[in-house]
Length: 158
Image (cartoon, rainbow, N blue to C red; front, side, top):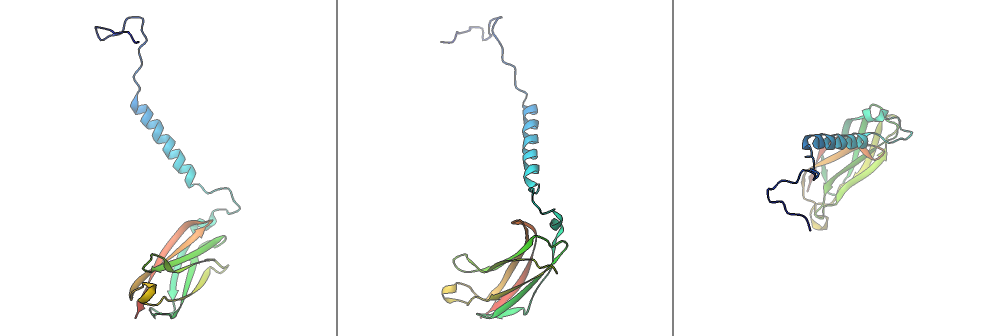
């Protein structure tokens, strides 16, 4: 059982706890968090030199602007900057279940271009895709990490 002090003060020989300076603890905590974030953003050791992180989407072109249900679509992506160890992922047009009907990934060629061929989804019915404008998302990936992106709008007609 702990002794009871009537005056509210501890006797002369009792040890007093020093107050913790919350400012110092807060600064140390912030430093640890920033160090963790900085370390997490650094590229991992790999044969990739990191030059490809300067890559960007030069252009996204399609063979037409308006597509009908079931028609083929040719989509070309040009990559500017370093192209070594890069891939391009293209996705868009969600159906009624939330699945992307356009979804593919390919390695960037040495000339910096990638061609995708897709079949446009059927409108209505079980596909759950309505006519309208849809955004196609293009991402440039380096070791699975997005380093650049861009979009292209296409129209799906009935």
